[in-house]
Image (cartoon, rainbow, N blue to C red; front, side):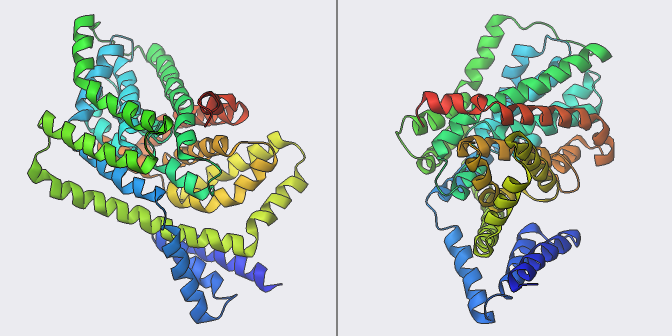
Length: 434
């Protein structure tokens, strides 16, 4: 057995053992990379190489957008924006059977898109909607399932931090602007599919419906939510129009969110030190994940793993439909035990050459990859959103699993539709020539 094969085995075996031992993902990635690399290179240069790759991995202007969007999301989370979006969404759909569940989905889509964070959407919307839905007779487990799955739509609808990470991992073959625009229809399709299932459940279980909201009140709620919604237009519109880059847009988002929160009066100047500290902690976690993931990604290239996997798939399967299905299955499994950021950084260089060789656009694959990993966020054993959503609803994960399964199947169905109908993702980028 060659040293290269042994090195690859050490990499994967040590990584999975560390995960089973509940070592944090970033440390698991870094340690496994170090062990594997030291088999090929003398000890001192090996350690130096890892340090170099971790440092150069985050030496990117585009990555500056992440701390800014994290900060903007934290300001919005505390700035009363969630309540304004919920009231606006409620005025639109609460009169329908199962109306509050629709409100949950619509508010999660709007807040997730504005904040760029599924966790922020889960906690902000779930903490408000779960109790309201329980008062109207909705089981807390069902409310949690709606909140958990719908909050992932914000990772597809721009601005989205994970799409910025994918743009970096793709080596520039997919621009941030194209990915942002491409995420709109898939994100909306996912939200509509979840609401379609809610309509079925509402009809079967005869959920109550609220009173119809007069247009004058809808207009009032819209005016109150308008400046929050305007952020989406400013950020994405500016990027698409070429007025500013994604990084510059993220800084503008922070400034806009700060002014808006201060005007609303929900955030005061004395609150900002705590907001900055929370944002810094979140950014540190994300950046450390990116550091170690970039080192592992480089090691994959060093060992020729992408070429090996690409050659294997193309030799074993002659039908690209089957290959896309196999890749989706692998990514679904990966998403169940690995956090989204390292998964994107590690597996993009592995699978992107395969799908490009089969004619899939890198932008299209980015949307497919992110949706795959969104499903993983909602599933055990590592699903971050699953645990956050269950905790917010004050129910156990085991109680949520049963009502959650149909929602997960809906997400998988949408994944397959988006995979095999590229126009859903690519129509807008082609329209704007991105």
